[in-house]
Length: 66
Image 1: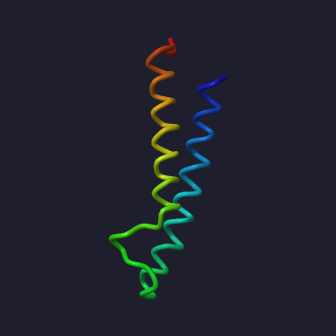
Image 2: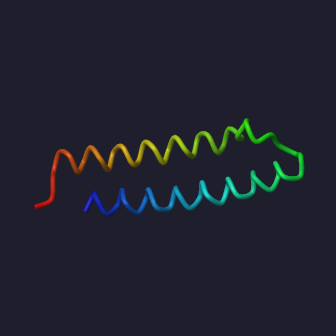
């Protein structure tokens, strides 16, 4: 049960980050933002994706499926 919850959370977060990065890239193309400095919101969301993925990996390592 937890596996599917975390898997869903990872998927939703990845979609959100992809959407945020797409908007940011458009802003970079227009010269509004710089490519080498992602906005803090994107950095935080990437961190949340990583954290959720690490939790999922730890859960799977602790309780491997047979």
